[in-house]
Length: 450
Image (cartoon, rainbow, N blue to C red; front, side, top):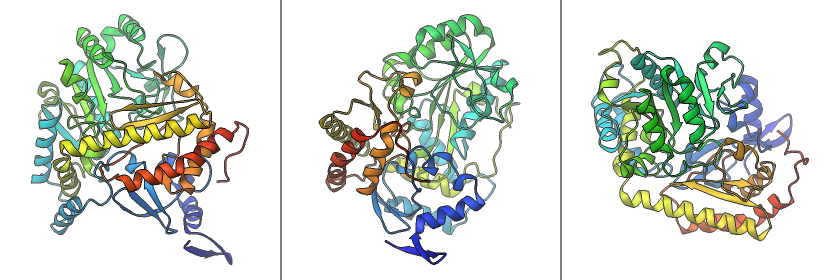
C-alpha cells in the first residue's frame, strides 16, 4: 500500500487526503454521501478508472458497482469516448457560443426520448429546477406534487419530505428552505394511487406539475408498480397539470429510450416534460430537460420563462455524451441487464445461506438490496423500515475484498457493459464473507471510525 508521511507516522494516502480535505471543504467532500457517514470508515480517494475497475490513491483496485452513480454505462475510460474527448479538447474547452456537438447531442436525445425539443444544462439538479420553473410558467400555477423518497436534486421545493396523513404539505427537508417554498410542495407516498387521487381532488386546479422518478432509485431501487406511471400521466392530463418524468438516473441507461422505453413506449403515453443527466454526459457534467414543443416554446428566447447557463452545451461534455450514446447499442444494453440480474441473484444466494432476510429489487439494470425484509418494498416507508444497519458491515467486507459498493443502503447499484466473467468471479468470491458480516451485525455496534 502506498503511504505518505504525516507527523512521522505512515498513514494511507486516502486517510491523509481526507484529513486535508476536511480542513478546506465541509465534511471533506463535495457531495455528502461520499463521506462514508452511513457506513463508517475513511472514504477512498480514487486515482483512476479503467473498464469495470477503480484504483485508489493507495494502489488498491476495486470492481466498481457505483459507475459514477450511473453515467458510465460503457465503463471507465472507454477508448472511443476518450478519443472523441481528446479531439474536442484539442479544439478548445468552452466557447460560450452555440457549437455543432450540442446540436448533434440534442438530435440524438430527441430521436431516442419522448421529447420534441430539449434544452441542455450542466446538472440533473439544474434540469429538474428548470423543468419545474417551466411548468409553473406554462400553467400559471404554483403547486408541485412529488413523492416521498424520490430525489430530484437539491432544489428547494423538491427537498420537501413526507409527513403523516394521506396528503401532507411538505416541510423543509433541510435547513435553508423557506417555509413558504416548502408549502408549495405536496408530498405523497410513492406507488399510492389513492393518495394521488386525493391530492388532485383537493388541489387539482392549483397543481402546476407532478414530478416523479421514472423508477425510484434514491431510496434503494423501488420500481413503479405496473401501470403507475401511465396513471400519473392520465390524471395530470385530466387536471391540466404537467407530468414530469425524472430520468436523470434511468435515462439512456435502462434502455435506449430510458425507463420510458420500458413502460410508456409500450403503453402508449408520454410525459409532458422529462429530465435527463448522467449517461447523456458520458461522465462529464451534462444534463437536459425537454418535452412537448408548445411547452418548450415558453423558454427564453422564444418565450418568457428565463433559463440560462454559461457552460450549457459545453462542447467537450456534449462530445462525450454523443460518443457514449452512439456506442450504446442493443448489445450494450442487454449485457448490463444480464449482469445486474446475475449479481443480484448471487447476492441473494449468499445472504440466504447466512439466514439474512432480504429482498433484491431492480428496475432495468439498476438494483439494490433491502435488508431484514421479506416483502417487496414499494415506497419510502418500506425502505426506511429495513435493517439498514446491516449494510455497513456488508459494505466494508466487500470493500476489503476489492468490490466498491455505494456507501449507503439507500442507493442503487450500477453495473456497466465492461463487466465480464473475471469481474463476476471477484464479486462472487467476496459475497460469502460479506454475507457473514451482515448476519453478525447488530444495530448497536458502532460503525468504523471516521
